[in-house]
Image (cartoon, rainbow, N blue to C red; front, side):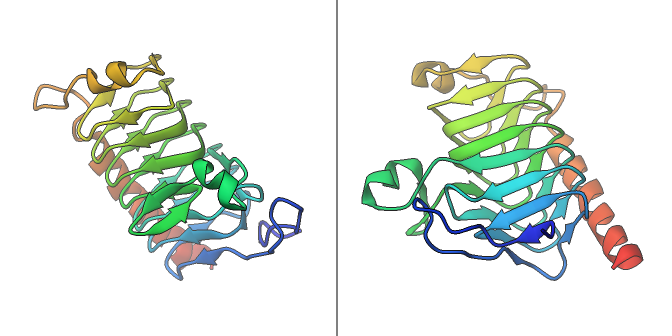
Amino acid sequence: MKNVCPNPKCSFLPESRAPNIHSTAYIHPQAVVIGDVEIGAEVMVAPFASVRADEGSPFRVGARSNIQDGVVMHALETDGDYFKKNTVEVSGKRYAIYIGEGVSLAHQCQIHGPALIQDSCFIGMQSFVFKSEIGKGSVLEPGAKVMGVNVPSGRYVPAGSIIRDQQEADDLPIIDESYPLKDLNAEVVKVNTEIDSAYKNEFE
């Protein structure tokens, strides 16, 4: 089995579809991308990342996002009308997982669909997103867990927090000029975009 391959046919996923990977993206040989996954331009997928659309699908990862070492992406069953509850809708199309542009999925975080992460978010090391939407420009600090809520744009989830109530999500602190990690994602995206290009030039 290659590290980039179609999903196997199952009763809950009767069609086998292969990943659609932009020519400028880099998938490390020790990463795995399976099934109906769209990988955008200049995306870096690091060693031991698992992007596995073999139950819920499709997945979409926007341009200049990065999927770092040990990240796990998987989703609940999406086939059939009953399982639309396990999808998110973006521009009239349904996805099991939708990752916007310029998003950083940091080391060992887990994204389990249904999940929507909008542009320019930083999802910190060993954090967890499930049945949730993360608004544009938000930050999940390391170890944060978000389940069943919509985090408004421009907020941060403190390290180690568990957010399961929508009121808690609405009350999350706003990212302002005093927030020490306000520029972190832009820096991480810049570095990983260059790494993506370097790997492409040297190893492909």
